[in-house]
Length: 192
Image (cartoon, rainbow, N blue to C red; front, side):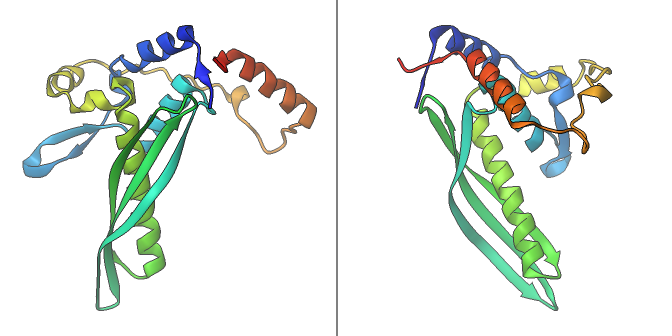
């Protein structure tokens, strides 16, 4: 466990308190035709990596519960609940529950795979959002959601073909080690 320097902690807190731009928000149909705002799992993980650093946080599955399992006429439907803990390098953590379901699958393997992945992703997102608005908590603010729908999304994406990791790229151990050392120095961690 590491302490996070005061300057780094302030930067992290400042980023976490920001509400998300419209380019991060997705929508789905809710109960009675309502429109629900959410962030996709990969988006939440990407933002967490950017705020905390790729090695500044981790997630751990604490429990998995089979909530229901129905089989009929060669089809299986099931629901799974998962509790996940998201921990920061300084020892702070948040836990939450996620749910995943799979309807009318032909095999138990496919049903469990889909439901478990969905439940874990849901639990990670729900745990991450407890750290702040930038990790999805703002999606629960009805006033924010009604306003952000009217804000234009940025059209340009930071996509540069020369930044892609390609199959023919060689990662030399020494080069990789130097890059990791440089990145660790940037993390600004102490043992205070």
